[in-house]
Image (cartoon, rainbow, N blue to C red):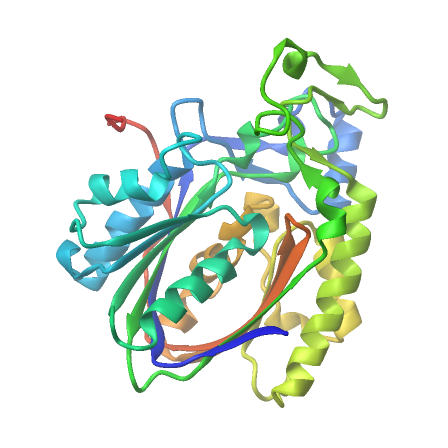
Length: 360
C-alpha cells in the first residue's frame, strides 16, 4: 500500500493567485440563461477566473511564490527544493521548474522537479518534498501548484469549458523535528486513463492537421483531438466511489475521529455534485467542509491550497488546525492526506495582471 508518514516536516505558509479576468457562467455562448442557472444550481460553479493567452500557470505561481517568500521572510538562497506541479507547463521541454528557479533567483544548488499529476498534484508535491526534507539533508522546499486548465480544452465544449478556472498557488515546507507527521496515501486506477485525457499533442499522437479538426459529438460537445476531454459519467462514478472508501479506511486505520480529530475536510473542488455526494457518503459535518468552487471552479491540483487561502485563512493563521484532504483526478489517481498546522503565513489572494511579461 502506497502510504507514508512523513516526519520532521512542517507546512509554513500558503498563497494563491488568480488571473484578473472573471468569467460568469452566464457568459458562455452555448448556455441560454435558463441553462446557465441550471448549471449553477446543480454543478455549483457561478464564476471562475480565466487566464488570457499571455499568462501561463508559471506566471501565476511565480506571483504566489514571491508574495509567500516575502510573508515568511525567507531569503531566496535558503530554498533547497523547488517543485512545480502542473499539467500546463511553459514548454514540452525544458521542465518549467528550472525556468522558475531562474525567475525567482534561487541558488544553483536548488533541486528542481516538475510533477504533472493534475487534481492530486498538491499531495504528490507534498509527498515528494516531504520525503526529501524529513532527514534534514535539505531544509526548505517551495511547492508551486497551478494550472491554466481553461486553455487545454475547446472553448465550445459544453461538457468541459464551464467546469475549470485558472490559478497558481505556493506552499512552503520546512524541516522541523517538532512537527507532527504528515500522513499520505495514494491509489491508482490506470485502466481509467482515457476518462480524462488529451488525445493529440504527446508522442503517441503528434500534432497534425487532423488535431485541429473539430467534431460535434452532440449535446453541445464540440472539440478537436488536441483538446482535453472528460468522460463525465466515468469520472463521476469514479469520484463518488473510490475516494470515499479510501478516506473511510484511512481514518479507521489511523484512528482518526472525524468529529474530534479533524477541524476541516478539504475535498477537491471538482463540482458540487461530487463533493456533496462524498460528504453524504462519509456522513461528514457540513460545517467542516469548505467550498469555493462557486467562485473559482475546478482548480485542479491547486484546489486544496486555494481552500486554505480563500476559506480558512484566519483559522490557519491564528491557531492549530488539523485537516483531512481528499483529491482525485488524472490517471485515474486519488489520494488522502492528514496534516496538522500551526500559525501559518497565509497571503491574501491576489488578482494578477500580466503587466511585466516573463522574458523566456
